[in-house]
Picture 1 (cartoon, helix red, strand yellow):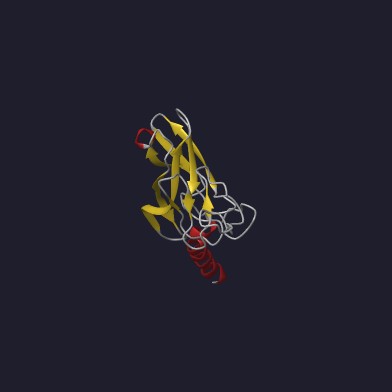
Picture 2 (cartoon, rainbow, N blue to C red):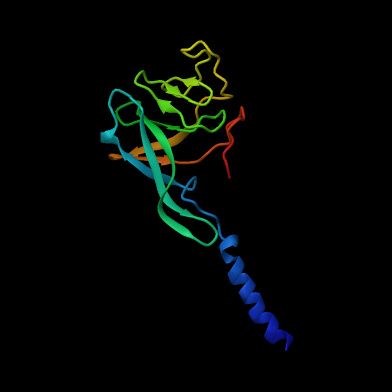
Length: 164
């Protein structure tokens, strides 16, 4: 009687826990995700914001082609791209790119140059409060396709620490 009860109970517990025991994949951080065509990026290096879309999965549900973030892409050569996170490393606000090639955070007026490096004193004369440069992401160009290894980082830290 015990064997007849324990066997289906164990199988049921295993089936219920299976999604939690599997590797949790969001599409983010596991591999490269296609985000743009290289030919659509301005040759002068002007940053362009592009959404990052991938299949997102939690323990039991899959969300196909869901937006998981965004990046700024900037041509840096004939076949090279710089990918920069749109999230300010200070408090997690979204930065914007202006016509001068600077990135500005609207929350605390931090400013960054076109490569994402901190500008210590902003154009308004204030000191940038961000603890680090904008977070760059690994990017590659294959043919005309720009791919990014997308991941998010913990804001407010001096070190660039990836969120798990």
